[in-house]
Length: 372
Ligand code: NAD
Ligand code: DAU
Image 1 (cartoon, rainbow, N blue to C red):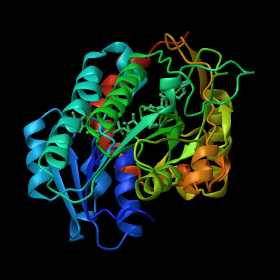
Image 2: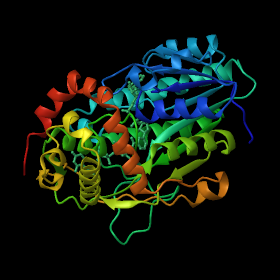
Image 3: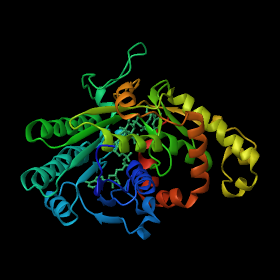
Image 4: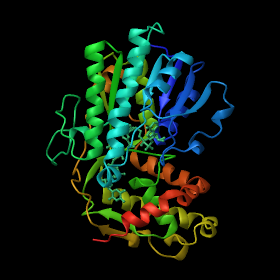
């Protein structure tokens, strides 16, 4: 290991990947303090961090990454030497309905963080060593045809959605702060994550919850779009490696070796959910609307709906560089990962049901009642 953070700031640490990362880090690394900085938008949830408030190494601060003065104050007051930047508007469908929040948080917010980091770490030299790690996405590379090779770190950028365009812009800003001001940066571009604490607007938790609730399972278009699914815990391990062993100024891709069509993902979840219901009659009372509790098949809930505009057809990741330079490789296979994720949602009913009571239900009603 080359680099040892002492005081780590995690932006967006109350979101899906951020919360998993904070838990992973506190489990794995001894005496480093972790300060989560999060605006608690619809996607941020303090329940994702519950239990950690008892850990003396953990602190939560509510705030907006666009507030450069607040970020600078925090870097100084907490003697932050390392920043892992997850905070973002992250859902492609929302970016299509309204790009403005994406420009603000993903572009302006990332730039505010970079300015604060430069001021604290380069101009005022408040700590002896620093690192700014930016968490990005494979979506910046655009869409692949079936015969195309997987994305690698020098694949030209070709973002197709407002979301991916703002992530691409933020990647370029991070690069510019490295090249121009000498900020110590690392960037990782990752494929689709799944696992515990994922907000149920994303495909896998949405499908699980709809099966358990006996609701239609919306598949966009023909469902033949391909994603490379990665369990969130494998992603967190990758970020830890990039932070500790990555070279300043470098970019690393992370993938899951699990290219799969959306329709296959949905069918697999249907099969796994039916199997669980058949094995465990105690679940029938908890989820009476689930097909498995009524002697029916979850597969019959699949409903093809109008496709997402500009829908990327295929993502695939070549992670040979991360494997060679960081020792990264995904540990979980997709079926194991889907099984454990389904089991997590089966047991964490109150976590997701409290979200259904927030704006989720109304948003789903408005945006997903559109069979094709
Ligand atoms: P998420 O939507 O679950 O969480 C985002 C978090 O950021 C929330 O806690 C939210 O409250 C916070 N946030 C939003 N705007 C903020 C602001 N202005 N100031 C402070 N906090 C703010 O997202 P996620 O799925 O956990 O993704 C985390 C990061 O990883 C994002 O940058 C995303 O682009 C990237 N990424 C995600 C995936 C994936 O599959 N989910 C894959 C690759 C990369
Ligand atoms: O590739 C990494 C990206 O993965 C991240 O950068 C994004 O933050 C993250 O949201 C995710 O983007 P996707 O658009 O790929 O994820 P989503 O879960 O929204 O959709 C996955 C696929 O499933 C996509 O092809 C669209 C499709 N889909 C999605 C939903 C919500 C459906 O068919 N039906 C649905 O209801």
